Length: 499
Ligand code: ZN
Image 1 (cartoon, rainbow, N blue to C red):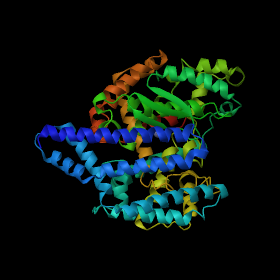
Image 2 (image 1 turned 90 degrees about the vertical axis):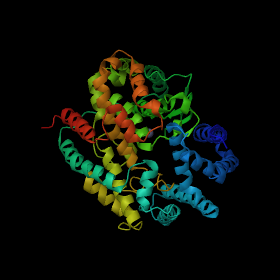
Image 3 (image 1 turned 180 degrees about the vertical axis):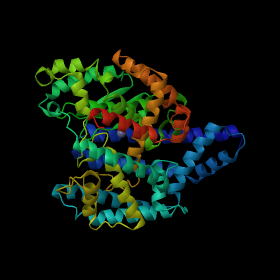
Image 4 (image 1 turned 135 degrees about the vertical axis):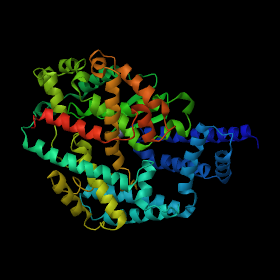
């Protein structure tokens, strides 16, 4: 086979795979937004069939041989090589797993999700515990087929964040503990910031009206995106020019929907602004979780919680809600959306305490996989850690160990990428401020020039490089968590007038 023939084969295979993936992505968006529940079984069965097709396609021995061949072929250019490496790496994760093992795992996964759901209804950890135990055992078993020298948890961490392992995350979370836990204590002791006006009654239709103005301000354009509504907001990128984002309106919380939308729009821009030649292949969509999260958090926290961001649009919000916000200045509003206070629920946590929620999950996962922590009594271990690091303790399982779906769904090693993403953003943000006048652009309603910077320096690379390489391309430096800690220290020292 000539080199060009090999490339042609690869292209055909990518085409077929991306056709299936596109259908599955649309189905999943549909399922979580508008699809009637009664049709779930019919849809899920067909979707499972399609997933099986994708599985077969990705471990097809002919394709694995082709990928190997292209990787060794001296004519293969660097970009194709990167693609083949990513495909090959993904295939190797599953190729040795016996099919019946895979099916058994996916059945267990469903049962575990259902058990978690039921446990949440009963607000009791006990019925979920045996499933969690089995899920951990299954994860261990599936990883064992990779015949890797690394530990199971190292492998899992690397799945979501290539290049990361226990050693590197230990170092990162040690710093999180050393730098942020004392800072949080000082904030707790300081005079609280007034947030009472955020949680009055805010008519949802008026919130929707504000959202129209907000997405316009973000230059989030209906030509390539759609904003739907759901219970737990998420974003699905179908292709660069088809992004499906969601939001949720809470009647007694005015900042939740805007901030969560800004977050999701950050994800959407990343998918939209990749180099068009990567659209439809693994270089356009296979970015690591950490770097994806860095883009959503950059928009949500670093930009979306700043005064310059709100200057042009806060008057619109005030006009919609004169009773609630008429006397609240933009400065007071922004201080309120940055207020910090230790709480129990991760997804509602503020920017400063958030990484502690993640650190706790990391410590628990690490212990569960190295055998120093058991699933029995894990709800108590959970509470002890919350007490130790945040000074709060869950009174019910739903406020504690049952709050996240991740473990029920077999997503072990995923949580740490949330905190890492925030830390990556700080480094991008520092460089961005050096190169463009971020505050003025926001004040002058020129948000598109900020997303242009992101396109040029981060987004266009897609998955062409690993996260740390993109950090280096954009900022001239490998990952340096110092930017993150200093950002939080500066911000909260000022906000709470700390000494
Ligand atoms: Zn996100």
